[in-house]
Image (cartoon, rainbow, N blue to C red; front, side):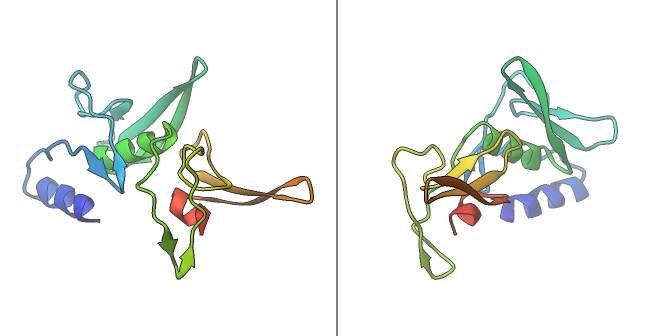
Length: 139
């Protein structure tokens, strides 16, 4: 993405990248008290960044990423920040929902920050797969 390219350039130039407020179609959770600039994103000793989230009092590890922005995107996904709703993808009309937090019918955010597609078939909940974005799950 353009954000990842800008971060890579800033790293190569020896500059700290500026905090971005949106990436991957998500609004990122900016923090003025965290040294990374993002809520629940922490620098590790390896120079990479970890995303963590509190779920019912438990510390849930979301992953380790190359940039603070990538970790912030993972946190935004896990926190239920839905991407901008797309109505068409891959030549298909997507089933948009105004009551589902992901913005799509039968697509649910998991604690891992990924998205599950599920469908009711003759009264049974059928799991269709796990995807990186809500749009991918909706397709």
